[in-house]
Length: 306
Image (cartoon, rainbow, N blue to C red; front, side):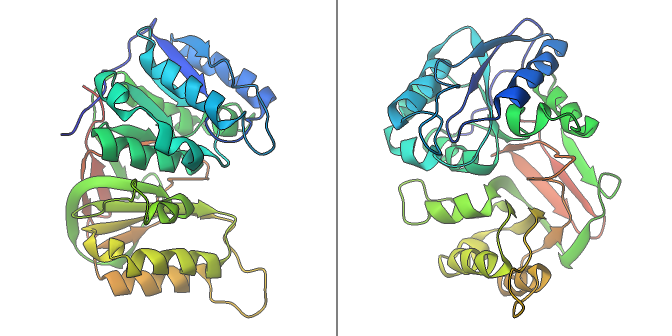
């Protein structure tokens, strides 16, 4: 069953964790003032500042921080400091039953996609795909719109994405509705064949990525295609593919690759959404119902809180 977390109120405590790679410490510290401006208290996980190669501490310690924040009754939301790599390593050991009995706002993107998929699949909890503290909010050039969408955590409201936010382009015409799922393409593909495999049946599938050549995007979309994930989806939402350009002379373009697989899926599809490794970065709830209309060039997403 779908579970929406409780809304935030001023004075609530926010838990900060780093379940993937070590976050930029300077950006993280700078981001804390934004949370304070929202009237929120901050609790930083015990292992946020740990480093273990490309991981923010060993698997056990990163898992401890995740569990601790979900179990902490004072913490009303958990925001990831950054992404990188590592969440897939702890997914099998997460206590999903505990999360089911302690539902709260969980926020992040990029490598956090694996946790979004796993948590929603195992518990039904709505989670949030949005800009993170060290990766985005703490940067000196953070876009005001990236901050603006945090307000959805305080008051139930639908998100209406139109051409006014960014130019949208129709790839396959039509209308589609269903729960919204997905996130980073690399992480979505890595769930295939695992107990946390993404379920796209009747869903609007969001995909985005960064620093991947078109041939890598091709490989991952082909994997989703062969696994039936594109065909199962009700529609495709193409987010930002930052710096996904060829590094060799002989290459298909990113647009050619995406067009190929949207045509194979033959489901309503639009691209140009500012979801992902981009600025501004519009945050959205995953797991809620959404409606896409290519004629109106709009995507309407239900509230993720209660």
